[in-house]
View (cartoon, protein in one colour):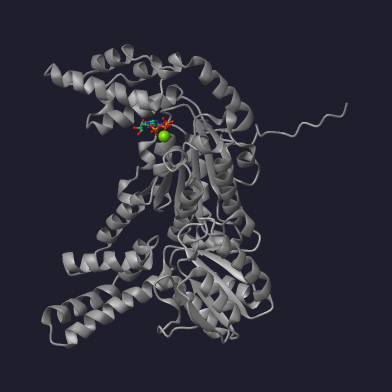
Length: 520
Ligand SMILES: Nc1ncnc2c1ncn2[C@@H]1O[C@H](COP(=O)(O)OP(=O)(O)OP(=O)(O)O)[C@@H](O)[C@H]1O
Ligand SMILES: [Mg+2]
């Protein structure tokens, strides 16, 4: 039994009268509820505004049940042990329909004494305050692998059926795909690619791939998934091909070493030894110091898909819906796990004090606390001063890193990387000199200098030389000069509250916040 089925079974057995089940997947939710109800020897009834209250095969139960108050009355009067699913009731709740409220509150008391549980299905949670103490809220997680597998199986059964009717192409496709699925773990790859999709979405993308290529193409599923995730708002899905390599990151030795160690914690040997799955890290640093880059490289290094949640966008673009969007994102990360979950620009969410923001923050913190799936969180931020202290509390992240502007050795490495990226040999350039005149330049600024120099050389119709790069460096005013005060404050903050990501030696927990006890 899946975890969610267990939770539902407990609520029914414990006679919880009203449960709000948050989901976009009505059919799947009903089929889960049907199974659980059956196991407990209960009938299941479903209500919608159009059909009224009926059994699953459409036989009406009670009279005048299309009306929301009518259905609640019918439930109250019915004496059978039932699980009742209300599909459209949430539409009547936010409208302050006094009759619906009253009826629900009355039901709450009377149903406790009976063996009935009402499940209100809805894609978003909107419960009037008066009812909030009477309703239990559950979120239906996205489908697990075995549920996706049964969709795959039913698609295969469909193909086989068509094949049997003499449709030669379908017969051939069936034979080929059957063959494909048993080889080289392809089936597993398909199911993993489908994680994070609803059952309908998964069925659609697999069918699309079949129509387009006559086979089940994992890359089509992944690219469709990218689109679907993007549409859901402020989320971006990176498959392994879209990420960076650790070798693309110059410097940041301590942080890299730390990531290497954490990766080992995912090995079967480490798990058997008793190591817990890492929670992830928070990286603070000045703009352009490679925070985004290291997030993309860490995910690739760990061989996990990466989901980026744009905290700034979610707080502004989805204002009014922030908590719902956050919940969807957290749900998705769990479904895709093991994965790296990158929260970009967290200060845009975690510095607010508005009621809506506070609700979103508390949703995230509770989720972090209860998380038992391998989701590795990388949070990035360049203004930590106003961050909600709850986020910094011990136990939330495994480590907090401060990424400083690169030192001389690091700058040399970064120049080498970017010169190599433009397909030139770094040994042909005066790299130590570049590094010595770029004190307080960020990695991003170094990259821009190389790019500018390349452009200039091209327009001069000549090959790029060290002179071009020196010229570009000299014409660049680094952000550290323009925002000197900000950088100073950030550095001070980093020294007291975080571990250095730049040092050659492994990060030590030498500068953690200590509790100040006043004994005077
Ligand atoms: N340490 C580095 N090594 C190599 N390249 C770097 C490094 N730091 C930055 N860069 C280059 O600069 C680009 C921009 O850096 P990145 O987006 O990672 O900075 P950031 O710290 O996330 O900045 P912001 O705070 O503005 O989001 C990278 O894609 C990379 O090309
Ligand atoms: Mg960034």
